[in-house]
Length: 495
Ligand code: URP
Ligand code: ZN
Ligand code: ZN
Image 1 (cartoon, rainbow, N blue to C red):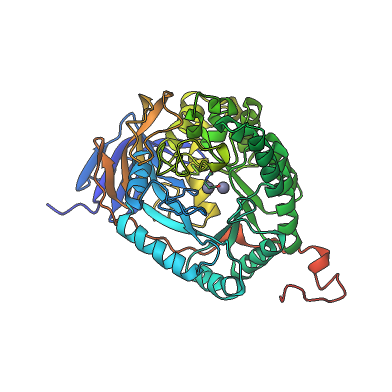
Image 2: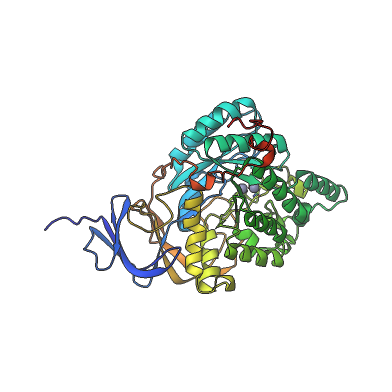
């Protein structure tokens, strides 16, 4: 008997793609998908996927893992625990943050972070490079070199006291990214408004977690989006706006995209499923629902779903930022913190896909009419692969990495704190019941989750070197102020 050319055949499932679904077999040879077809020959191993959905493994392109905050607080997850949780939630790729803080050397930050990832990661990963110390060495030497070595995206903050950068260094980062073909991802909120309002709330005794939800004024998001978009348009640099939370913010993005600007944007499950009333709980309980920007109102949820359906927002990420409900996390500054002293962030690696699947596929959000499954695949795998230039990821097709999640679309699960595999100890989605759950997860041909068991080994996840790709390419339309053809010949950008 001749050996099978295929190491694994997933047989008879419904293959989900961003444009349609069909029943077929998927044959895997080594780490890659070899063939998608019907009645494929026997594989060395077979999985019967009859009645199941065979979907691309999720790509979570915004998660904070084993990261030290600007205040010096290490978050609760290691690469091992975070990627275990992500894998149980149907993900096979993660983009997390090599985070520079003030005074830090970016090259060393990336090297140290890469060591942690190599030791622990179970799924594949890439880094966004956080720049919080935009000095000449960072901008002119380290950033260009690192971008050239396969780290193709930068992240900056326009708020948070210790890591925010102002408008001028923001332009420096945007220009460095333009010159090196990278995408710039931004946490965009107006710092002054948040700081001013937060101080006044605390000074007047409004210190409970629920006041966090109003301490980031709604307009601070739209204002920062406008300022950021104007800066990016000045030098024609593509941007990705992180975690859009308000209807007004989504409207700003719609307008910019309507003008042909290369503005991409994401939102997160917390902004689609939670509201500020979730923070209104006794004592400090509301801290479990604290993230920045804060969760908003039901009307914002509706606007965000619509923005996703219209393509104004292209992806949904977790913004996993795990702080435990104890002295290592939410109470790191003491047992009676005011909301300004409580670290912002909530976990979400494991719940992102099931929550979205339930809303888009099982319940069928009306904005997506009959294309809920396609939208789910697009928003959670195919679009992030395209935006972050992961050409072997995000789709089930020959030549792609065999990154596959096999979903039971009928399985009903009530989310609980105890069922989560990360180290936060709680989930803000506890008590919600969803229909549809990933039951087997395959990363580059290897089953890493199956039979409710982790099978992948820590360290088996691989770093993915990327270039910026199409999303990061400028449009070719400079603002007149910096265009030598229209500004009396001044070569401001050194082009
Ligand atoms: O509250 C959040 N999202 N914490 C993580 C850091 C960030 O702003 O993305
Ligand atoms: Zn952020
Ligand atoms: Zn974040």
